[in-house]
Length: 129
Image 1 (cartoon, helix red, strand yellow):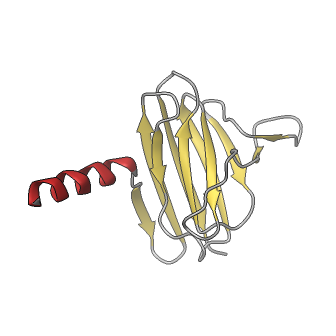
Image 2 (spheres, one colour):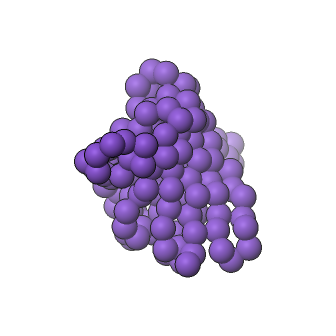
């Protein structure tokens, strides 16, 4: 029974990719990660309610972002973001490599997933004004 519980715990832990995290005091935190399979989870952020805004940069491949307000129920479609490298302000739900995106709204947690078969890497910087 003990071995079953350990195996079950390890399996559950592998389902959530916790973000690597860099803290800049109380002002900002950067989350980052990478993946190499379509729809794979790059990272899930820590608690974001204390922050006022977030910027996302995908440095390789394409990613999309999902959010939750309560920590349990996640969006079933990616969140629309503003592409700060575009000539229009049309919202996008999938990033292009080496572009910067503003993630509008206030969420409890965000998670970033790879979109497509090209390996991806991304970082998310959240700040407090």
